[in-house]
Image (cartoon, rainbow, N blue to C red; front, side):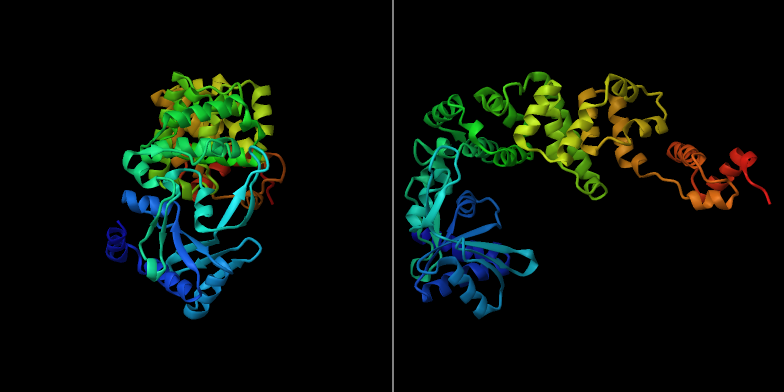
Length: 441
């Protein structure tokens, strides 16, 4: 098997990987061996190599005195590669041309003082390092040292699990030690098309029954929710989370019923449209996962949403975006669904609602006029603005005051409706409609 892996490494990688990445990986193995260090590729990179999936995020584990920091410094000295080292944590990062980067960590072992706690870490061997991983398919290592190049380290049977497409933790306490692994397991099911083994499903149910998720900090739980709601296959993922009781473990009022499934399926279509139109560049800070969060929490009563928001410790920015989908009443949807609603009315309805919430409202409606109105607003209307300003109004002899807001607001409506298309037309419109209040010489 080692010969086959070595051949795949030296032929397929050298051919397919970007040269900076390939040269660095092989170079790290050579430099490490000269220093008396054993260097391994670990984790998802190895998994995806064996699955023949593209993955350019390489993680390196370094076993031996000085570990990752010593190897990074020596490699940088020889090749003048830019590095950043963290001696306290035994880690380092190499920055390569074309924005590639490689993360190095000294092999270590972990212990958990109590369920859901952050682990205590100390140096360890490659075997101990692999034993702290989440699933067998991620507990694989490939040696980069020339004397062992291509040697597969597989102490937990991850290779056979890859072939049979099984997801399996390393020991019975794994989910209780770190319940975030429940979320990762469900995401791997969707991303890789694997299935959690029956005995592991029972362990998940046991962990949920003991309410260990409630012991996670808000920060850690929010990170898992964000990753989950960012997955393209978010609808089947949430369906699975509902069936297993994970959503109820987050908050007892969270549900994923058939109606919400339909809404979120429409929302994924809207998010794809948003990406395809390159609107993410025109709306800096747009967060697709927040749109999904708005949909998932839309059915919560206000007090339940408030308790969940506090539990997760959501930032005012995220909370505000979700609230943007919760505040509009039924009358907003009725107006969006009315084909006769003028463009400037659509603009006024949606101008203060975050784009994530606008896409949710479109999905919530499910009606064609609302879809067209929301997408017209996001792609065109929201970017309309007047060309003249208060200085221009002053030059026209209009005295400063609240009238400026009225004039510019009416002008903007005309712009949105397409009735006015240039600065010249704006000035002519103001002269026509507000000539009577000008202060003449």
